[in-house]
Image (cartoon, rainbow, N blue to C red; front, side, top):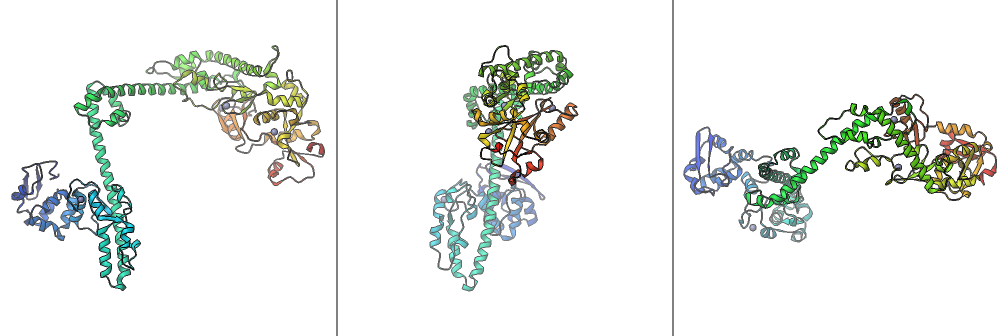
Length: 638
Ligand SMILES: [Zn+2]
Ligand SMILES: [Zn+2]
Ligand SMILES: [Zn+2]
Ligand SMILES: [Zn+2]
């Protein structure tokens, strides 16, 4: 309960002595009007007064202390500090009274909002460090820049030990770097009055005091800002209540209730709502059309996001159904699309597009297994011909030849992630997207699972393999993958390896073509030194070793051949995944799992080195791994 005059003009409080009723005749707190009732109060026993005062706020106590000489005598007495303390307990979070202020001084500092000097009312900012409340004009008078004050210091009194500026000037930024002249005068005077031998002691005491003042000021600043925030929140609440009441009357009750859990955020973020400070009848009339417009758009957004949630839920169920679709034995090792592609099949789309309030279960999807298998086969055919067309676009190939059987039809580059891709992996390459991407646009959503569509295409990279074929004198238009395998050649890249005298990377044609693709083509046939594998004794063993080695982490990304969402694991993890998730005991590379060559990373893992030469330290690892072939023939290194 409070006796604050602005809030109530008639109030009562209960004490042990019975009920004392206080009546104020005017709205302003008039000390005069209270005199009769309260005259005898200062003479009550202290314990009774305590019972009374613990119901008061410090501001009431201040007013009482100014109301009569008796009250003043009572309340200004040091012995009455506990009465102030009792009243202070009613102010939540207010820091304790510091040692350098008396209780009445403290109450005056916190609660009397008039300027200490000119008595101008409603001065908001307290300069806690200066223990004062000054209006703007007076604060100019009562403070001075540090440097000005320091000049007034007598010799021997060090300004930086006693002069201090506010550290946390929330309400008085201009006062930053200024000092309180009252403190300055006091220091100078006390310093003069202190015996020379006691001055150091005095300075230490002052420093301790300043520390206390700073602590006190920072506690008060944070109390004040918390209070300000609480006040603002209350105002905000009242605003929200008034506004939502208007909206309920117009039938927006349901929408308003939905927003309530969210603190009415969508509405309160609206520009027009933010700018309207009070929702009285007048401002409501003006704001009504804008607010209704905002409500309509909020509702639209909510329904759209709800719809997306429903759709996402259904797609997640489809994701599970997809695993079941592909478990069919006939599909093993065959290219299988991502869930997003399956979601674009008309039969599936019909289910996903059912009205939001209809429940969809996995059985709805599983019932379509046969149809889906047919759609998957169509999709696979289309995808294969898409890749074939990509090659044809780049290179003139006779109609009766399948471009994807040709050596030049094996290498592609994803236009999105820039990776070099080789068949068969390239057919299944999709750039990593989650089910959430593009939910707004169904076609874009489904299409963008794979790069191979009209907007995000892969490109055939015939240039890279072209130079390779030329280097081994093969006809680019007819040489097949099988032909190249049969040639059993190895390549070193002259462009990248020329500076290496002691060793070279040695690649098979497939690795060499990927390398060239990643390096941006590598141009002419002269880039390659071609070696017959028969001339490199022991190459098969070393290559086998290299293939069996778990690649150093970071060099390669692995992808599952049986589900389109598993990728980016070290080799052991993808093997483990294939074994456990797909029940394949001995996973086969390029069938059950794939290696994606990381962009700009080394792809060659076999090295050829001069026999009898010591290899540099950084090759020690590959030597230990056993992926180096040693040759005597100096021709290799020319
Ligand atoms: Zn003033
Ligand atoms: Zn890609
Ligand atoms: Zn190269
Ligand atoms: Zn998998």
